[in-house]
Length: 140
Length: 343
Image (tube, rainbow over all chains, first blue to last red; front, side, top):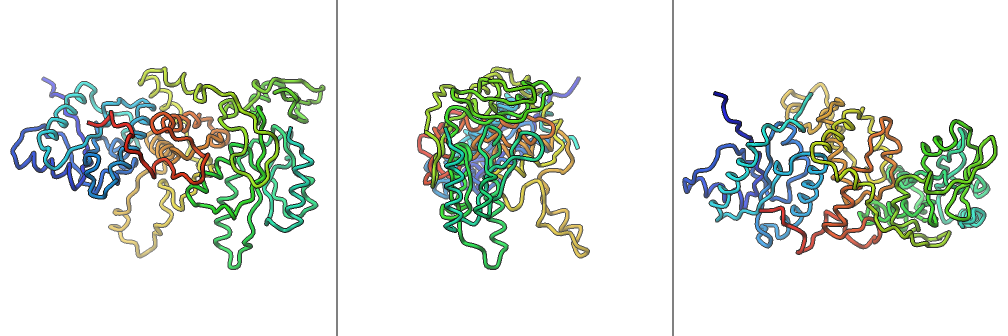
């Protein structure tokens, strides 16, 4: 029997909230799919579109950017800039024909371990029927 | 109508008074009907200046070059540079001012209104005259162009031969200008993003096939980057110019230098290059269409940049290149920015 497709997700998590949120999920022993590769960044606003594109190029099946809720940014307004920029990246990726489910953004605070596990679970379930991401994958 | 004699007279006066270093404008090229950029330093040379539908280029790029040249000079001439700019070109200047790349006092703008027409598309003209040699193209009285070929002249409606971008022009008048020529005519444009609709109506898979085919053609000559007035980064993400490899460079140092994009022109790398470029131009591209014009393999780059211009307008109500005082699109935010895509 063929093994079920397991998507690989790259998650850019803000150090001050989402990263702590994923830690909380871990230390609370909540169960969630092991498909995610977390990368801690200093702020969701520091996530360059190039990081996202590179993740897809290196073979990620999905990319998640997660930051603090509006008003909670450690740097006061980084997540507002992120919201604007990521909206444009999302529109652009959809426009060139990448499945919109492959790129998502979320607000997860340090207390929302439960929400984090839920987001990852839903993300994995959405990616499974899509199969492997080959469109932007490196072919050199 | 813009009177060319007035333009020459004013240019001569400004040069005579010594208010500008030189004037960047258009002159007749040596090959056929098209114009080429002109750099007028002496007042008597203003006779070379022309203004007709063949003045298609966005000369703003030369302001970027001028700034670099000035930075290298020991005792630079502090006078401004004169530039002849159409509506779209003045908006490029506004974006450069917005980003404080150039200062207002470093540029003297001769704004020219296109007055309901615009500039032509070389390919469309070639199709129109079917192999005959074009000698002259002039503005007509009523939204038309008069094309003179070796077998007499023909009268063509401007719509048929206008550049694609001119058909969707939002401001065919100069938005800034020290001296302006021509009248400000409302374009009466109701659907500024009409050309995008066909692409947007396709399914995701069809769009993917289209762009894959397009970017597969790319030979990475970077002509689009060279011609773009907004592509002024000191180091582009696709080249690693400030990483000098010498005999002392260790393997570890080489390995640790991040290489975001490979130089080889393969589809995946071309995608990264063009998408990054599109993102960098979001809220900055004024749709001058130069990237598409210079592309040797005819990639419709306008469709990519125009899309983000549309999203900027629809999501954030942001108009590109009208107010030099406003912050640029991604360096500001509003509390009510859409976040329906965020969980």
